[in-house]
Image 1: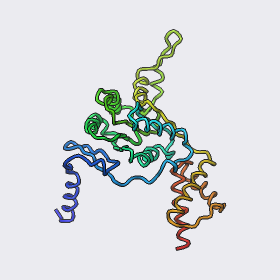
Image 2: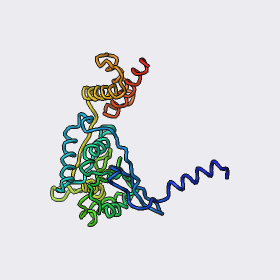
Image 3: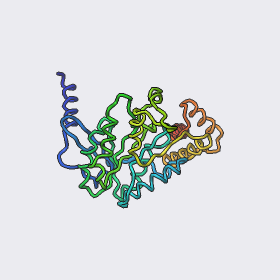
Image 4: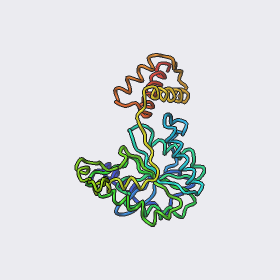
Length: 289
């Protein structure tokens, strides 16, 4: 084997070797859970997303409800697992990261987990139980195919005795689907009427039962044009200040280009607005440098 290739293989092996000891959560506000046939561990991150709660516009109701739920959790009061669902790019994942920025000094910690590792949720809860922090286990873009049995594993973990007794762990998940599993016409055809009452088919009941394990549902939708432009203005102002770039917010071309940018991407949302703001401020900055 050629030496450069051997070096790459050895580097990858070293990367996959398990760390010794537990992660120092005082130094790492966030971590990723890594699971393999040979080991499981938390890989810590000391750097966090810079987005704050004040950067998230047009989702005030969703933000206030999730903030209240998280504050209950941090205070040791009853709180719910949360499902944030809806249109892409509307701030679902960013809201959860912003919560960590706002509350990590009060003891909040974040563990990101892949969908395929959700079967180990009970193990994660057990390993976190002894730490004096409050943990949000976060699964981004959660959805299942019709024939994917792992959604039953998640449902079982959410209602299992180990998780119910965990005082310092909640699950927050995001998804484009409210019920997480696609519903088909065949499912609806299995519904029946009994003495005037509609009874859903077993397939529908099974699929809905997973999302029902999340006590808090928050819905996110695409922005109207005025709301989208408001977010564009916010991010243009923020990036201009950060990179010390002079930007004329009254320039009609800024508005026109922002709308063309959204049209090209097929979505008016916070993500599109932020990407456009990066582009516009960057272009303006090049003109003076």
